[in-house]
Length: 438
Image (cartoon, rainbow, N blue to C red; front, side, top):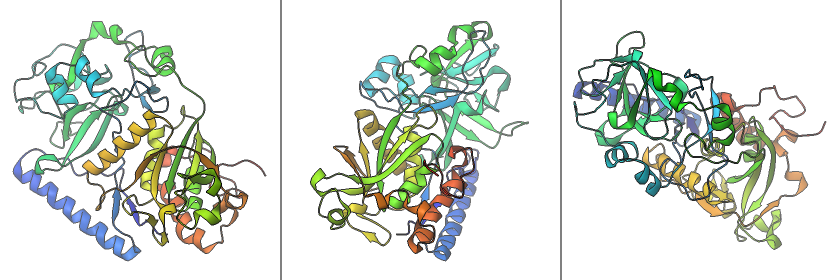
């Protein structure tokens, strides 16, 4: 079961100005990169799957049940009007109807519909007072007046954000161009794009839409303060979020052999327990012999118990999509059958929305060469597998399948998701992280 993934989640296309010549250069470099990756994949025996880190899941929709498990680390405004240290706050996810109610038509068109306002028409283009430019959707601080400069492009321009944590970048291939889109980290609002033709010291030009911003004068910053008790604990007071923050939550994913999937998630900080088992079928056939026939409806899956204060459901989804091939139906490499399908089993509407939104974002960004076939299925029951399947990788490091398929997945996660790994080095008794016992 070889997945052949190539991880490029920290790589974005080169930032360029909007001129045709610059765009051509950008596209040529992207094409050259793709050729190099293709050659490398042939040498490694891979299938050419490229995964992007930025997903922006669940930006535009949610039900009345709000997700208690999707958090971001950003800087907000303290009660004294200063910028806080990085802190965990819930993501702001609203339904389309709620966004339309909250925003003006132009604000909605730009921030939720990824629109662009006409040149020289934005209301903040000539704003010169001291203060902060915050997200019009959720009041997150984005840019400060000290970083604003006159670019001559017709849109407000800045050479750096007020806090790198508050901005998210992702590839934008719309309109026949390859650009770097910038979004609000908390609510996913489209802000504009960033280019490599700005002034010193950064050399960057963050090109913004006025409709995506709200200006708050320096002497008014206290009015958008978010005390820790609000933004990190209650989550709702400042911008509308979930008031619950449980210490334990569960996720159930399927991505081929459950030995490999279990080993991948055991090494993540905040993951408390990982259990291999079966999901998608009935209790009467939830055993390895029956599931192996491929006729029970079950998939080999893992149940992940995690602390949402340390790792979010969306981060788990990112790791899941980055460590298996979601474009092959009912198989992973040489493991073939419905029991090896790519699937996400949701326990509530919030998990369903996050999963579907991430799939939509990955598809829209065309980060895979083939369509995603991952199923999003209701979790009607999870049945732990037989004892000998649990923690199989850590207990059978010499197994040829483990060495050839599972350990490369573990190594990829360690290399590409370093910020999500457990802080302590795993012991020799449990080389793939986590787990209780001697």
